Length: 315
Image (cartoon, rainbow, N blue to C red; front, top):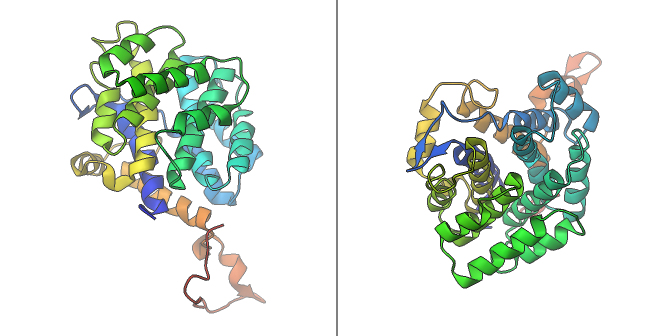
């Protein structure tokens, strides 16, 4: 395996945050960063607490934190796609379960076809990256097939991205083509373009996604450009792992002691990801379930468990 699952899990979440926070030139602007990942954190906390996807628990957590969500609002649309990242990570091994559970969790919010197709596209690409089955030449056709029959323009725009990449079309020309209406679908198309055109370079990928976001894209709002950056960062982070993210950006995040995505600091996001990977891998957290190790009211001594090489396998 090229990169460990924990590296790719962290890369996905850190990439989404950085991509949504970068200003032109590569400067991280915490003050202007939208809280895109708070809903994702709530989903991760639910999966950690229950060890499975429980829609009722997700609904309770989301409604308690965001009681008046309207999925047709642009800022909510991108937050919903980012909120589904934990599901894509948790079920990345099985395409059938991945699709089923992405569609299940989307039922928490209004059924918007563009959000649905965007979620399926991003989730499937991340799953391929984590299973090391992502082929840049076939990613877009595979993604379009995964989305299936749909009335939205997302498959068409993704196939257009494929053509532009094959023709070697530059960033400015591609930006001009997608700087039009239907902002969310254009953000998804641009994210795939930036990702696939600089596959092995996280830094260059997200810099492309945020390049001249105000001067080049005349009709793009700050939200639309942050949406492109966040999706691009999540895709590239999943593919390149946390090790592919520039160290100076990581240090900047870890040194800044300020709230991130509803948590007190980004260090907490990384700690939460460690626990998330543990639950996904089947590691039993004894500290969260102390009552399981009791016998007639008395604690049972903790046992060490050993296994022969290659016996413990992925789910």
